Length: 83
Image (cartoon, rainbow, N blue to C red; front, top):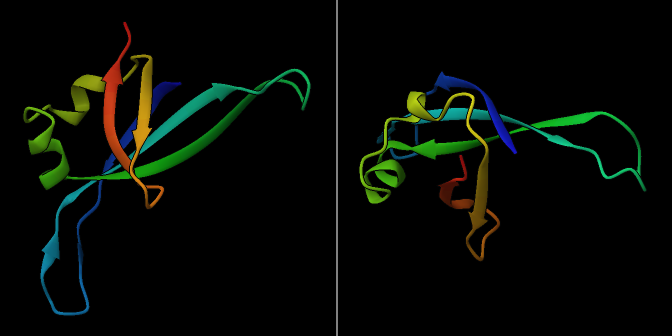
């Protein structure tokens, strides 16, 4: 997967607490058994989650190949930079 875009995205919870973070957009090759070309998707990384990943600057990930690891709830837990 390659990170192709990052957008700042903050929002309030139902209790009024502000969640600060980023929408991260990625592209990946479609398995030839299922189609052709590239697929695109996005996921959310909160500033809290980024601080747990050694405070990585999300914009430094732009253009890099990454591997995503998910938690048991299907949310991105860790981003491993491959290149």
